Length: 284
Image 1 (cartoon, rainbow, N blue to C red):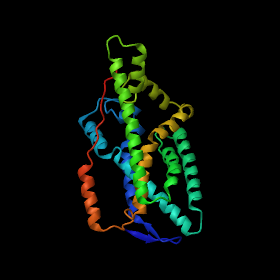
Image 2: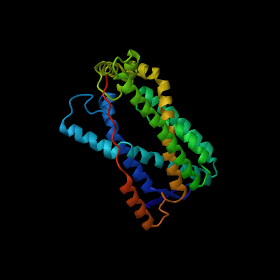
Image 3: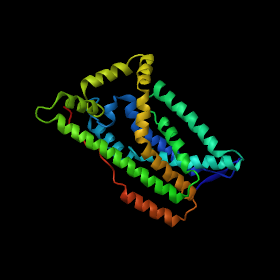
Image 4: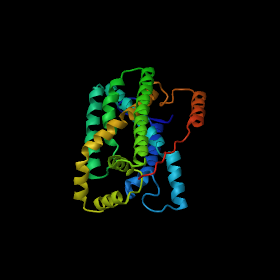
């Protein structure tokens, strides 16, 4: 683990900085699709235009090797860095928890400004809200952090399994003979985030192709959705942050473990990390 001395207290871990930079660039690889195209293109490469072989190949690589992986890595490093900042503050005679709360408050303000003024896909709001909750485990042992991470991972899995089951139910109901108009509307409303529904694409292009003030007004009108989406993703993000906190507290992220253990963990991780592919439904 590469380190450099710091004036305040102890050590700075250059390897953590390096991995964090790699994670950010990996996140850019998938977010750039949302920067440049309609939202549905993130999950459906055919949503914006007829995709070429190269387009499909790049989309598949992003879905298989990048999507979710680098965000997870960044979330774990966020948790590790959170404890690192708290520990350094307390070593310098400051109140670490209060420093963390101040930092998360500023991050929340930046996230909301980013979401409304710059880009709807902001993730800083989610990290700030999750960071407030993660503070509850700042004094816990690494074992308790891992146990809590497992519980929140299960909560996340159950929550999104319920969402998936709801979508399947809506799909079947919308495609059933003599389906009620309400069922069709519900399905199309949810399917619009994945499928190329012309009316939705035209509306999105009109909004984001218009004036900046018009975009800001539109994003401001959806401000509550930023919080609701963050709350839905909070259990997953908190689970990952807790893993990172445990990694720091146990010495895993600071190079305190022996090389043989790191190699065994790497072998196990590479062997068990099967990529996920999204499941498609057809819109009405």
